[in-house]
Image (cartoon, rainbow, N blue to C red; front, side, top):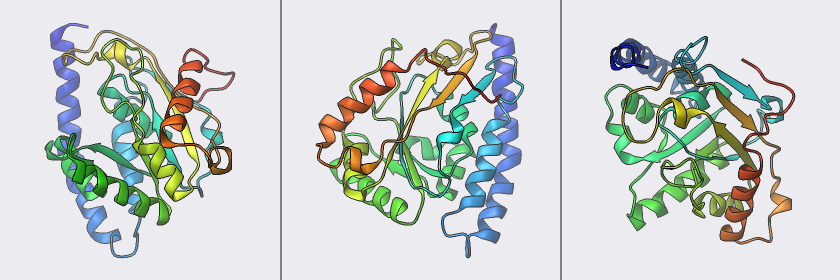
Length: 247
């Protein structure tokens, strides 16, 4: 894909974000007093992000295994991390969660401001106090009935091969006695690699929801061993898209 077409797509993303942020702010103002989990605002944010992949000729996206998600369960959701596009396409799950994201993302105009409206959870990398605060906010979110979503690698992969999983998400799952929902992302690194903002032609994207891991299945593990086991599970399912998909 040439620079001009890529620039047009980024212009569209910016334009939609400028248009949708005031709507998000109104939703937060009106529903915030009674919608404690900000369910409706998050659902609007899912719609906002999904616009960029619904019917897109650039990164046509399909979701596999959405039926495995119990909408009444609060999960620790974890996925591999390949590209900036991961966050956009993962909203296509249309399930309620709070993102855990590096604090710099919350300063991005309109998109980052909406993250603050949603009370997503910031993390300052390399700051121990921030990590402790993040873990506490995750436990509070789960106790309130919201899932949390983390990329255990901590940053996007340069090569497409998964980095080691950090134990934070799995510590939360153990302390909160919450099930883990593993998710596999494929194709985003080809559409938009880690370095650069130029989109690369048409690359299909697949999101695969694996079977949830109930707390009873890992309650005796350490966060480190659980991180390694979940990483192995996700790696084993890359390329295995299953029989059913939803566009």
